Length: 156
Image (cartoon, rainbow, N blue to C red; front, side, top):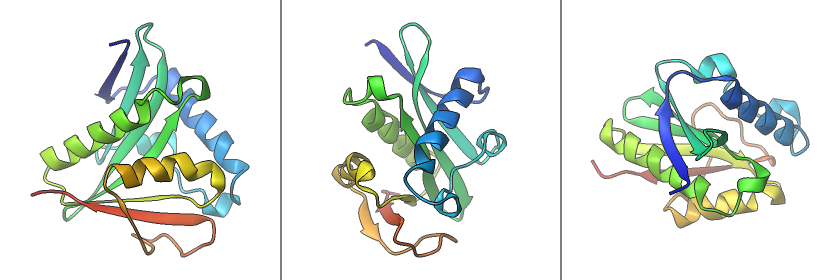
């Protein structure tokens, strides 16, 4: 397979570049106070696992993170695929890797916040196809016309 997805603890400049591109894309879709991404320092904390998809060349082309909130609750964050690598199933593979890790570490519920803008339609479709159900606001996120919330119960 030409792509490899792995959890990475050392996050290089190429992963930082993905995070910057994600932030840049988000700024045009919602006001800054409704963009809730982890910053790069937060992405390196022990309670966050970053999954990176690399092309055969070694280039980081997609990413997603799992944040462990404790008490069996996890959160999907920072899902992003370089535009030229979309529609190849990479986001689905990353999301499945996140869910596999969540189950392996004993998490029983996974939540996420995503945007309501039409550009987020493919992401919402992916989440729903993988078994996430729309719900009300989660964690400490405010209710907002800019956000949609999802949850998934994992087998114990």
